[in-house]
Length: 399
Image 1: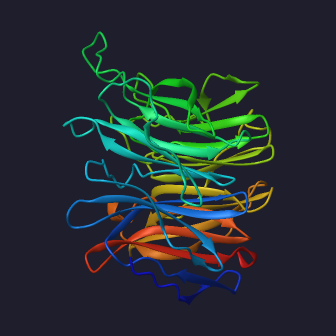
Image 2: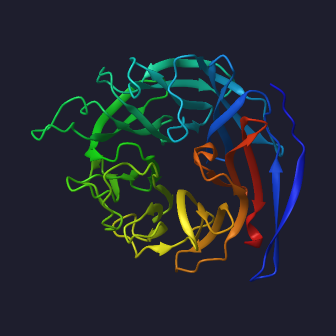
């Protein structure tokens, strides 16, 4: 693949504070179609995975690290021609020491939504530990996806996903049973252990989110009640026991289908931040809620968007008192990818427009991370009729 690593600068003015914010674009790959990014900052490293495809429907999963102000030569993790590739259900990855765990989705049958979550465990040197093994133990040809992965303290990984093993069965009323959310651990040698169901009824196709607090793993997702209320729920593992899921906030959003708009959770010590999209009041809204008690309770939601929200949120702690939230919103002129800084005391900054974008599926789900006090954002753009990744960074000090 051809790689171009030059940087160029765009200046954006925040009118209310007269500060200049420099947004630097980090040049990326320009061969094939590149999309479905997943950006991760952990243990002093910033990494990016994505899917690349060509005109022959050959698909491959790649990963790169940000070192010396550029993306490194991509490492190819897996290749195939029978993958399920979707703008919203993108591969996840995490790094723990010299290990990297990735996933992709592989078709298990001819049905549109029959596919498995396939994992690969490698060393960053490229050495293969365990390749192409299935995450879930059910063996049922159904939908499995929307994976989130994070490193744990045992040189392994925590992983959560939406699991459709029950959807082939029917309830008494004749409707198929709902999607579930499950959790497992992946050891340093690739064993799948401690698999468990977290919730027996979730939204079908909203992204999951996982973090680790001082007390253990935390999972946030969109729930689904019998009355089709689809609010954001949280569950934590405390003293090796998963607690009963509960809402971050009772939005009461009733919708008879999946909005394909998952939440994000970030953790810093005992402080949690959860951002999500809702239309509970009839207005598309991006909310953010903080917990100062390790997730025991959450404050009232803060409205983030100023115009009609599309959502596709991300959130990351800038320090122990402030987060950066990314989101998409649309006004009378166009659709924009924006960020705001939000303090745990409720102070919300003016928005910074990262880019005017396509509000459709081609943009994918923008990714946000904080690395070395800089804000990194990656999303998908269309260039010469091909999907390509666009990555930018900006210094957090002027926000």
